[in-house]
Image (tube, rainbow, N blue to C red; front, top):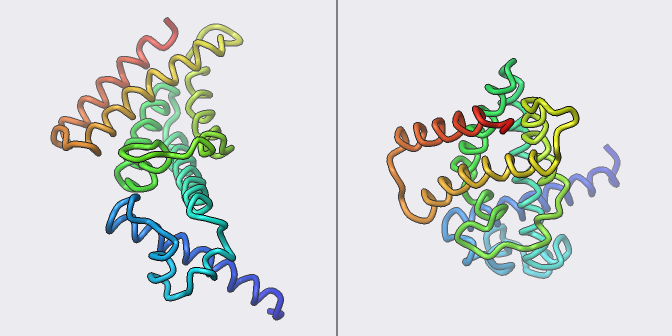
Length: 199
């Protein structure tokens, strides 16, 4: 490996270390505690070095949001690939969405602004649109109109999202019901929406 490649690899590693340190701080103390100074202290660099990689904290938040959407898209795609029937794919993708929210709680909070202020720019990520498209495509497959009405597809997507995101948010902000009850509520809601998808 040449010196140019080695330097680039070190830069890439430092960038990842900054992002990982930011996430570690958030897991320990919450999003409000995150600062460039704390990140620098955590990885034992000076703050000016952090600014060589990210212009400000907003840049770090945007990159972590992108990371969250990449992981979510992988989870949705994996859930979909395990089932043949579109109805099962749709239900399991929303279950994967649910599981992602609790496995990557801090990223989910950032991505969807739960219990924090989120940046408006985050809504324009192609990765965010990709996760919506994966699910919307499955909704279209269940619709009998050809081509399906895009407004109806969008309405059905947001019906699903409202229920799932609402239940996740309740459990984040204040402890909701136990996990088994949550799974039953979620499953009942998803099956109910899927049953009437073409109405």
